[in-house]
Amino acid sequence: MLDGKKILMIIGGGIAAYKSLDLIRQLRAQGALVTVILTGAASRFISPLSVASLSGQKVHSELFSDNAEAEIGHIALSRSADLVLVVPMTADLMAKTAQGHADDLASTVLLASDKPIMAAPSMNARMWEHPSTQRNLSLLKSDGVLIVGPEIGNTACGEHGRGRLAEISEITHSIIMYFGAHDVASAPECSLSGKSVLITAGPTYEPIDTVRYIANRSSGKQGYAIADAARLAGAQVTLISGPTTLTPPAGVNIIRVETAEQMYNEVIKSLPADIFVACAAVADWRVEAPVLGKVKKSKDGPPKLKLIENPDILASVGKHRSRPKLVVGFAAETENVVLNAKEKIKKKGCDIIIANDVSVTSGVMGGDENAVHVVGKTAVDSWPKIPKDLVAERLIKLFAKMLRREEK
Ligand code: PMT
Image (cartoon, rainbow, N blue to C red; front, side):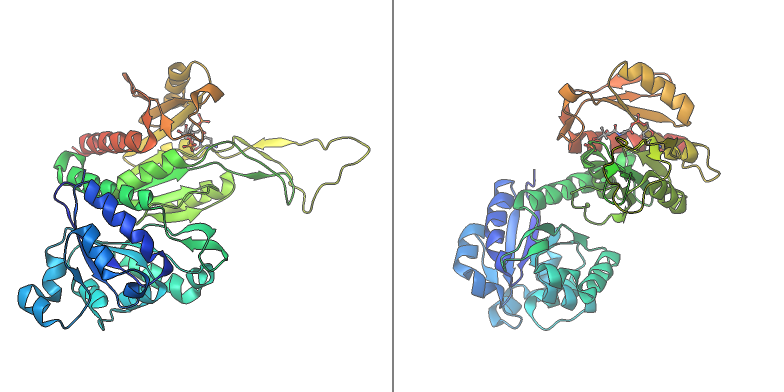
């Protein structure tokens, strides 16, 4: 899937550097040509010889190397790549890149690069959370650097938190998706370049008291996959997410919320957009008066919960004065899937509904695959069960075509 793609991989000096060896193997197995720059610190974790053997290429590490300057030079290194990949991106390398330092080969290449840069950070959780690292992260994102991870987990230093390098399979997948969508985006009819896409994903949590809430089984996977595919097709993406354990796709503006009301407020604030996709499993009802503190058991029996209706986000966007040109709803049904979805198109004022069966046996809610029915105002197209990221890719191609028709 990466046949002939030229990847310039910069390996930073962190304990996760050893994982980059597996990444080189995986990228080459996909057909990529991988050239590696090892920072001085990285060569203390892994040997240049292992990297050279796995990549099948000469390893670069010196800024001022007579040979390299004569043969290609540090600028040419990045010019000949399709993608510059930094794995692991250490806190130090993040700071240098964000500030534009150029005091070694890695930082000089990053500064001199005119190619897209993807980075997978990895560091101690406190370092990741530090305001200066978060500031550097924002700078890198606004400079267009695609960030993959980090994930929550145990780090090598024995602490727990966000800072662990994203799984190698996840980084490989991001690269494949990047090139896939890049190729798609370059097909003019599928590109969303210059368009803004607003997406909701995941469940909402509706509090009963300070410690308890009403929720549902949505994992956010389908919505996050759509956000990823939209960004890779060149769109500017805002993802408004209920609580999930997922790492947001690189390069997406993520807004985290808990309740339906918060999601509603953030969606309305984020308008206008060219496309709105309502993939979140929003709670229809909330407890009218959540209790402050923990409700105690009492001899009077269980508390009686009075539920009231939540705002309908999709219906509100469907009739908003800044209504996006394309409004996409989802329908989660356990019976009469297509019939109920058709009703929802009318009720919610959307242009198209993506209907899916969420009965327990379908395994769709929380699972990795989905079988959707694309329900338009006149026609229905039923797709086979496929991974959610492929559903997302196909949907994004469809949305791009629909948007183009709308704009004619
Ligand atoms: O998250 P995953 O585990 O990957 O699972 C994906 C999914 C099954 C959650 C997803 O594919 C899906 O079906 N999402 C919509 C879930 C839902 O709430 O469906 P609904 O039929 O109840 O609502 C219809 C539409 O109205 C949806 O677009 C929903 O986002 C929207 N809605 C509902 C209620 C509300 N108060 N505001 C809304 O915007």
